Each structure stands twice: as structure tokens, then as C-alpha cells.
Image 1 (spheres, rainbow, N blue to C red):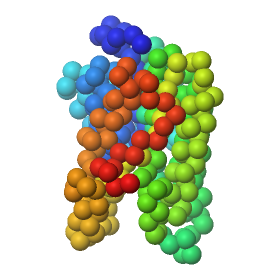
Image 2: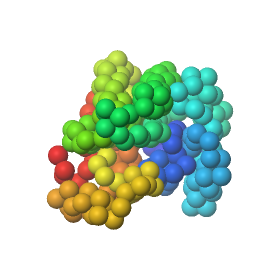
Image 3: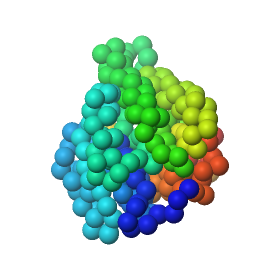
Image 4: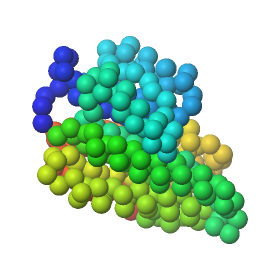
Length: 249
């Protein structure tokens, strides 16, 4: 795997890169020397703020809008990386949707929307990544530790993330001979806006007490896992689901 340098940086696409774990992952990869394409769904202001955060620290970044479930939009996202920086070495797919409800009560329209983003979106991004990522690169998807915890109200969400894990492990084997790794990161409770929204202090405290480390994860914690998997040091890790949850399971 080639070393990073200012003239020919390695290039990372981060979907969902305008906020939360994705934004922190983009910043962390930029700090490691990657040129970063920050993919976002709709909030351009947040995406541009993420770009400014990277460039203010001396890194390289551009923002590109894409619905991850739209194959033409995702192809254009990869095209942005190629035209701006010459190619793609790492893809970090953090974009996702969460809906919590008992299975008996969930509106099936919400189920369809959830699976369009989480399953189709992952498949579409993985498909482009499989075609475009250069040798020595990495593809990193996002699951959830809830797949193992099986907490009530997570049925639809867990079903979508179980599919993400299946796609990830199959793709790792399909890329035999390409020198490209494929792994999923599965965070536990992590203090992002998406996670904290709608939860009272008692619920947050209970969730923070689940790991033996007795705190919520942070976006920085997860970004360090991403940076490791994207680095030469993590290149022997392949076809795995990394439960980044402080030891819950």
C-alpha cells in the first residue's frame, strides 16, 4: 500500500459525512492525509461546514450530494472523487436511517423507506465501490451492535443492518485477488444527534451503563476504528464485523 503524500493523496469517500460519525470519520481520515469527498443527502450547509472543518485543519475535502439508494447519484459521487482527486481508495458508508417501533405497530411505509436507505443504499454504494476502489484500498460499511443485542423496538432497523452485514461479508469474498478489504463497523450506543434524539436522561444513563467501560461511545471512538481499517496497519482485517461498543457483547 502506497504511503500518503501531499501530491498524490489517497482518496476517501464518506457517505453521511456531514454529521455524526460520518463527519468525524471524514475529519479523522483527512488528518491522516486522505483527500475526502463528503457525501450528503440534503443539508448542503452542514456538508459545507464539514468541508471547512477539514480545510481549516490543512486537509483536502469537497462535498457532493447523493441519495445513496439512487445508482446514478452514487455513480456521480464516485465520479466527483475521480475528477477532483484522481480515484478512490477508501469508501466509508455511514449514511443510514433509523426507525424504532414494535414490529406489531410499525407503518410498513416506514419499513420500506428504512430498507431503501439501509439495504438498497448499502448495496448501491458497495456496487460502485467494488468497481472503483483501487488495490490496497478498503470498503467500510456500518451495521449496529443492536443486531446482537436484539432490543425490543429495533426489529426493522436490525433487519436492515443484518442485511448490511450479509452484503459486507459476501463482498469481501467476491473481491478475492483485488487487494481490497471489506469490513463492517457495528457501533453500540454512541452519542450522536441521531442516537440522542427523543431519549430522556434516564434512558441515556441506562444505555451509558451497559458497556463495562460505563459510558456512551463517541463519534471519535468510532472514527478511530474507521481510520485503522483504512490504514496499512488494518489491512489484514478483512471480511469482519467489528463490534465497537465498549464491551457490551
